[in-house]
Length: 397
Image 1 (cartoon, rainbow, N blue to C red):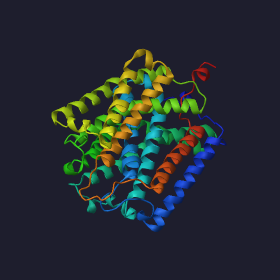
Image 2: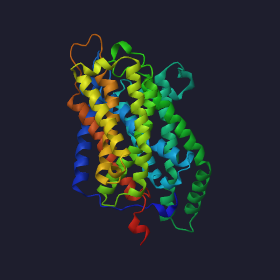
Image 3: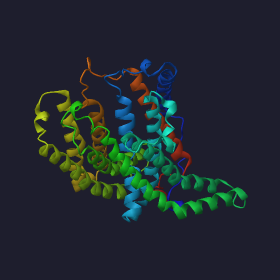
Image 4: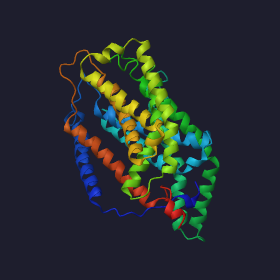
């Protein structure tokens, strides 16, 4: 993206929304500190029957899926050559980088021995037979790749504020030119790494067929996770763009978002068809008609999270209206979030559980605090860095 295509917003930070964000962050920090000082049992309802819960289902699995806008938009522009969508790359990269950063923070809270999280970086501790190792190493490398991809945006801002004749300005400009020359290598690596760990997250549950509802367990679960991540990538870009436009009182970039929705419709439809076909071939449909919480969660995921976005994005009249476009993107984001929560929490049925798992208030507080921190850092980034594209009015001023 050219330097004049995006600029800092310098939007006021002292708002009631930011005060609420800071309050939620403070609450999450309190329970987070309690977890690290007094152990995971002091804050969560996890036990031997339920070793994972909200922090894995939402903070980690959902966070990774919803950060897919970074690699899908990068693939769309740099691999498939759709240069007209270049303006969405920077916000998508920021969302992905922050998303993975806070996924790691959420994972640290969930790990019992969080101080050993660096062990996969040592080749002597590698276990090539472990799916979790593949997930961990890919996430670590991809997070580093995202920081490298976002670095030119930070360097561009330094170029704008440093003295044109200063040594620091020349050094920054040289570093930025060097990164620009090799950036395509990191983009390709990012797409490959994303495909690897998105699918591997699903592979974590393949080994538990007797502990999961047949509505979600399938040997093709890795492919389900990869296809759903690809399907939600562009809707997540649309969702973030429309939220940013409303929050910063900018006109929505409908000339970009409408074509993105048109491209997203067949991807979502393909995932929906694949999911239904897998259910039919496994003869698991009957479980969807047994009155239960799992069946209700399944139908919510299928109808609200997949069928509704296909209907809205596939209808030319609906996707051209900002309200409907936002509804379709929000439904798809919600649907993938429901899918990850369903797979890791709703579908999971430990054989000797005495009571169902219900997240504690502390677990909800930490998750809400991480989301609030994400919002705050995103707000700071777009305020002081050239991330969001200039509006139509600014381009024609």
